[in-house]
Length: 212
Image 1: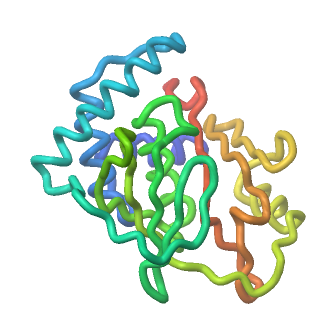
Image 2: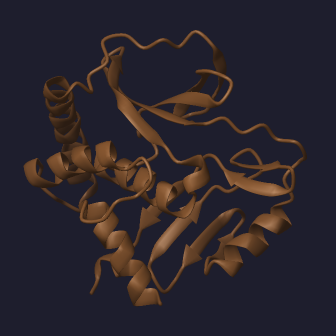
C-alpha cells in the first residue's frame, strides 16, 4: 500500500495524474521543473526561489495567470504567510508569498498534496500578483464555518488512522511515504457539524519520499 501511495503522489506532483483543482498548479510546477536549476545548500535554495519567482512571472504573463489587480475588499484575517479575504458566501481567497517554503516548487507541491489528502477544502490557483515587489499566489478555497471548537485529540486520531504519527505538538509524519504535515492546530483544522476540515496545511517531503 505504501508503494501505491508514493506512486500516486509522485504521479500527481509530476503532472501524470490528476487531482482536484490541480491542473493549473501542475502547469506552473511543470514550468519550474523544466526551467530552473536544483540545489540543496541554503544559499542555492534562496537563489533558486528568486529564479522561480521570475519564471512564474513570465509564465503567468503569457498564460493569463498574471493578475494586475486583485479584489481584496472583504478582509478576514492574516498570518505570517498569507492574507485571507472573503470572496462570497462559499469561498475565501488567500494571498500567499510562500514565505514558509524554501522554494516556490515546495509551495506548489504543498497545494497538490493538500488537494490529494483533503479534497473537500481543495485549493484552486487563480493566479499571481506582485505587492510591494513581493510575488504572491492567489488561491481560492471553500469557506468553512466552525460550529464547535476543534478537539486536537480527534485530529490526532484522524491522522493516525490515515498513517500519520504525531512527531511533536501539532506535527505529523508518515514514515512509510516520507511525507510530513505540520501545524495542525485548532485554527488550521476546523470542526463543522462534527466533521474535521483541514483549511491550512504545511506539507513537506523528505529525502525518503524521492527514493524509489
